[in-house]
Image 1 (cartoon, helix red, strand yellow):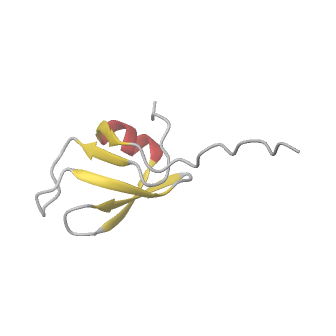
Image 2 (spheres, rainbow, N blue to C red; image 1 turned 135 degrees about the horizontal axis):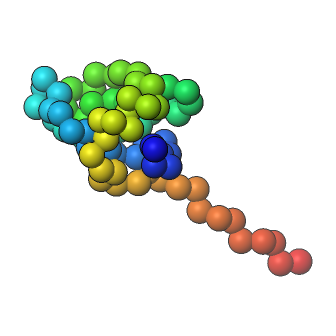
Length: 73
């Protein structure tokens, strides 16, 4: 099962990319997950199931929108 991914998460895959980097940034979510290599900026699309098999760990969570405080009137 694929863990809960968000945009701008940095993930580490099991196999090294030909450029030498293991880390990828999540740039698109949907039925397919868009990833951008942090070593060479190559972009790929992987089906969720295939990414779940190749994923080793989530290195860093992306920027999450901070909850807004209710207006006090």
